[in-house]
Image 1 (cartoon, rainbow, N blue to C red):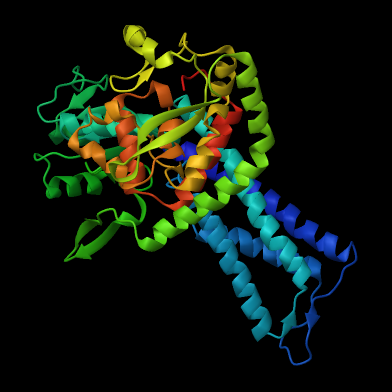
Image 2 (cartoon, rainbow, N blue to C red):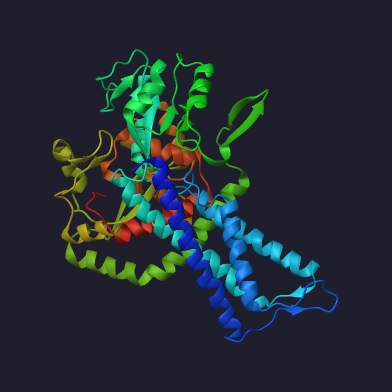
Length: 480
């Protein structure tokens, strides 16, 4: 399906579903507060407005809400499908709309029932977010199959093209499907080295390659052979609203508030701040860890007691497994887990290295590890073996969310740049756990951990916790 068609169709679907949701909320709130009677908005004697019924007010509110969502581009194809911008715009524009209503009601001397507004606003925002989330799930499923996505022609050096293509393929929900590339001295019929991406030509024939590949988006990565004037010519030649230009910098895994664009003499300069953690950020994260871990330990105490009793009665050995891990600033600590293996598991490890079927060259994993007890497999399937780590969080050696806590023997094999992961405390869960876990290569594991370190936010932690809960309740066949 051509890009302009699926974008228009998806926007129409969002518009219609937004209308249905808001109509149900607005008129539902009116009926819930006033009943089916046609009550009038209270107009003070010194107001310049004439009287109006709440049915008319609800229609105006509905139209204003829909119009505001359109003005904020909350249905734009640039933001739907992934990221938080879509949700943030809905919350922001709805908040501003009701703020404007409150100000106008005060200035025009109109008394709108507070209960009616207090029902409409939070329910409207909540149901809009749920509706958009449902559509996002549907869109993601389509994009995983290669549909409802922008078709992308990558332009740049072979190395940068391979890097950006790998990043786009890791996130199919973003809606970019690579259909070809133009690289220096590239010839049609070749593939980009190390990939299956077809070469459509060299970087001087981008426009022709765009037609040949059937692409609607050009993504310029990095190359010394494509000067700024060349990028400008490409942008001028693209059809407005049908073909798009993306500049994909080679600096990967840097997002959010660390990136700032500052125009200087018509040249957009991208400022990338070095990662830093203020005292306030650390206090906020630590406070969240203490509160959540303390509540979780109290609530889950009965479950943990049952697990401990079953472990004690089903196999010889201790209930808890203590293992030395490396944490904040490279300091060692004792990480706690419910024991899921036989007592001599560590002694058997050397004989199993050659049988590894998942994991990677640094992290040892086995899908069917013979050292795991039958009850241990159940615990691992639902991540119940990690519950004692809540004590590590409460006492300060770990965090709820963070990089994976490594073993000392793994740290001994780290390259220098990997030690950046020790800038924050290791976590019970993290990007590594919700992004593939045992199926990840070592490079991918490092990339995810360093991405977390470089771009930490409390909101990001909350999203990872939600994804972890979903992965735990719907476990796949992964080695823990």
